[in-house]
Amino acid sequence: MSETQTNKPKDVEEYIAKHRSYVTSNPDCGTSHYNLAVGLIAKGEYDEAEQALFKAVDCSPGLAEAFVQLGGLCLRRGDVDGCLEFNKKAVKAKPGFSEGWGNIGFVHLQRGEVDEAITALQKATTFNFRFIQAFATLANAYLMKGMVDESIENSLKAIKLAPEFAVAHNNLAIAYLEKGDYAKAAEHCDKAVQYGYEVAPEIRKEVEEHRPN
Image (cartoon, rainbow, N blue to C red; front, side, top):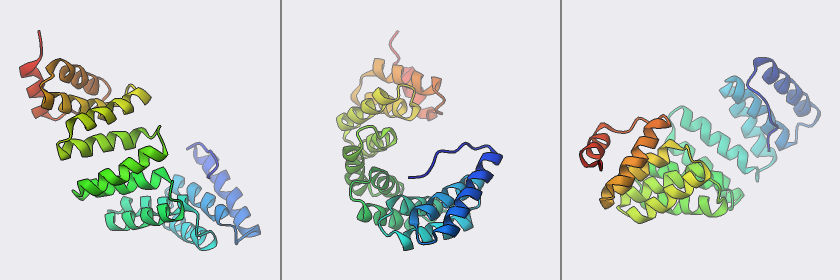
């Protein structure tokens, strides 16, 4: 929906200026307001970006991406409930919008609502079978539910798409510990650390205690 841009200040300024002119010439175009908001977010102008996003959805109520961005701004200031509500509006506007479902699942998981998280994340991964973060979050939700095999299945899908995705390796290490498969637990713990994840000390301790020679 938004145009590609770099994070260089000059490029962002040019992008914002261009989309300000689009908004001026076509103030009823929701996409123009949305694209302006994307540039303002990149610059860190969050209050003005939020106003542009509200104008975007006023003009184009079906613009699901704008609702997701509004949810992201809520989350940035710690408003988890607001984030959830805007993402619900996103998937109401576009029922197959995987990013909205992924965000809904993430928020539910943060709130400890594991069943609701699983339902949303299953939808996210069904609508986008390459949604790496959603597979990893779903794997985490299954771990919290004690559904170890389902957790492993989704973590493996994540690392098939992104072999160096450290969070998924960490989830696999925990899941394989649960199953008593210490060789695989050690393998994925090592990879999680290698790829930059700070594995919990108690997990690393358990891996080392059971690491095969």
